[in-house]
Length: 249
Image: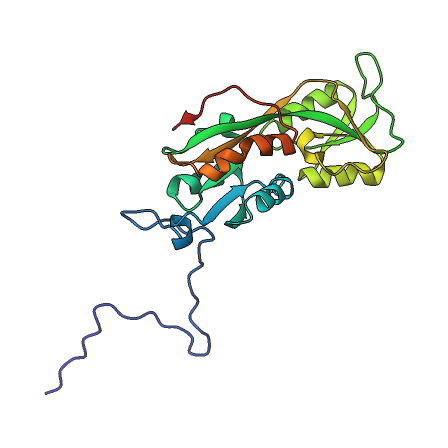
């Protein structure tokens, strides 16, 4: 008597024998395991720091940190501000420098400390005339602009109201390069050119006031080396002090 063949309870998925089985995608920033925070052994010993910031600030911030924290294993990461704050909250990042801490709800378990205040200025390449006078000082001016907070739409509207034809650059460095190539004024945060003005270039006051705040986001126990470096970092980026106490979330 032949017995019927019973299929396995959990059959394997059939794959093409000529093609390797695809592996699941890896997370760029893995989440910590349950029951604890994933930490690198060097980080636990105080020799490694994972620090993140947004793309536009990276070429300005990281050279300063690299020089001043040369004895540490400094891992640099870039991402959007809200993602950086989330990485700090989950423990895969020690600290993040962002400019939208006061424009978003930060994750629970993070602390935001103001590093300093930046302001928008006009960048003028050699031979470019400053703004005119009157109610439309930017009349018929093609003008690129960039900011590192969430105020892009507001800034564009204010430039248009002053007579400019405003277009946004994707990063601070890109906006400066656009202005240099076409010999035009550009509206940017002062920190974008804190050390990179070429001969004949100048920064002049913007036709309206707009301030930005750079913040350091950490966990409840911040890296003391970074805290000690904040005054020097503020000076290097040409930021002004902000009288605010740390905000815990």
